[in-house]
Image (cartoon, helix red, strand yellow):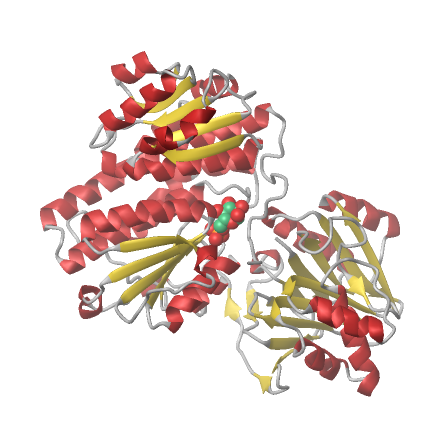
Length: 625
Ligand code: G6P
């Protein structure tokens, strides 16, 4: 979603801003812009569409300014066009603002400012901020005070960057329940809503906390609360593990990330699972990156607290929600604690039954999903223990929780989540075994068997990836479909949902996932010879019933595709196409069955010529509710 960047120092600001913005591209956006102060004048350049449009504009204008802010916008208020792109300026054209989040009371403020004679040029909520700051600035010509008075009037969650022609030596950054980092250089400083963007220049950052304003000059960073009180904070060191934003020879990031899954799993598993004979250790403080503020790394619940848990609530969105659905089944099966899993946005306005004996788990690749953070905050207020599962140790979620499991994926660039899904699943297997060991619901023998099987999964995924050419050939046969139905049962019902989500996201083909048993309760009405039905079929407790449900679809002449294990002759007889996987224990199958479905969606998307890594309308990090 939207991204904020900034720079001031000896370098030309525009190329730096562009480099920073490029790092935020993966988050999703539909327009981009910069504001720089050159020879005492504020100049704004912005363009709808890809960053390459802005790049062309900057190549043409060649600004040589040393200070500026930039933005990638994901449209919320107003369509994605040049006019609505950020930065927005005040009526005098001397103050420019970039903004992430939503100003909930913008209509009221807009009317008030219009009444005072301010004219608006866009449909955005952001523009009110530019006029408000400008209006307040007239009072005492003190920009910091003007910004402070202004932001105190804003309702919502937001991050802002502000520059003014009258103060060309500084950038103001404002954080209110959002995320902003100042990257510290030598006589230069950087600003970014995602620290990834400053990492190419420095790994020393100061993260703004809630309701804070940073006054950034090339030499200094000062922090203030919204009440004007100055606060001191030491910089933290960013994780030094290499985040390679490079396709490494793959045609798309998505394909590279699908192929990284065995490695990612091995890294996540080896971090917590030393040896099958040893209990799983989720308290791994010693791996905390030097200097970071991650005192909450790992799970720090005492035996007594773990034994006292009466309920677990999991909150997540999108792909992370599907991983959480698998997590619920695993924990209930192996630990025997009742688990609720909710789409995080559904918690709003609802009576959430959490208390001091509840463990609330928020799962989010980015750690910035607004709905997930809001749900977790609600559970926290009710006294629940909190645990975050995220790929970003420096995220908002990581700061919010008492316990933290960080997936070892490196940066996931493609908007559609793949490797982080697998890593989230791995975390749930680890967590379920860990809780089972600590609560005594697993015998040491059973726990050992589970750990041995878990360690076999990366090699199975490698075998599936080696079959990608067969999967490609099969996939494109179904690429012209208008509607696709995915079915699965038990642990693979979430796989069916995730398979359908991947296909929708990547190819724009309408796809729905159903619990296989539900097919006959409605969805079967849409089936005919034009609708492919993809069945996730793994030997185990629900094999026969799933197969029966597939037969119901076959009887309606649907095109039949299965994900099934090697040597499943019944599957070979029943389905038109079978995407095979190595034999797998049903309990661990969600980690392997999803892989052919990821590849299927990838190949269809590529075949159809879609924007694989940045599908239309989607954002990687969804920071609005
Ligand atoms: C967006 C992305 C999805 C992702 C979801 C949750 O919608 O497009 O791929 O699954 O957000 O994101 P999170 O960062 O919380 O896992």
